[in-house]
Image 1: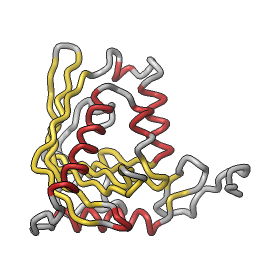
Image 2 (image 1 turned 120 degrees about the vertical axis):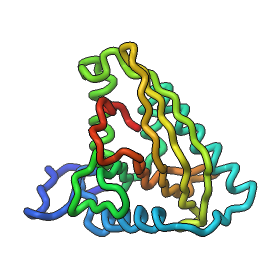
Image 3 (image 1 turned 90 degrees about the vertical axis):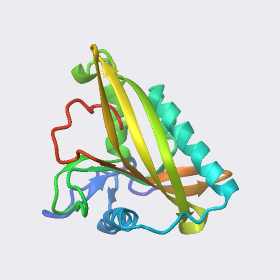
Image 4 (image 1 turned 60 degrees about the vertical axis):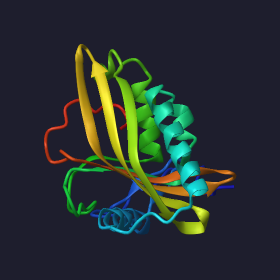
Length: 208
């Protein structure tokens, strides 16, 4: 039993970098530093993915499944794919982005994601009335062994969005940490490095 579940969460010390997760605790600085380190490691990676064909196929099928859930706005089903210490990050700085020093386009943990899902599906979010129609396309998927049987993944991602007679695209690099969960995976870190991250983003109120 989680002993923190029945007590009110306490705010972090001033100047600290922390955020709630869905059981009332804060993600600690070590977790956020690990997400930063993962982003730096993947951005600078030039070696060829070393997963075998069968492993890469499993990773690709999982990513395609995730994309289909998001395109179908099955956000609560997608939420079930996330680990307890999930980090979702869209940097606003190209290259070596920092959670400490830079403003982010988006930065969410499980609790914030749950808030966003509730707001997006409530029917009162003006930016999603009517909702965006989206289509995600993944390319150049590569994977490397990660922690405890999981994988570190790099891919190209294009997200087409249509709303109110306008079609726009969000194009970038997808970096993902996949944790092993049974015979499938769970998403621990999801980072999208948009090619135009340092430009005005318009309406990306849905989950990229």
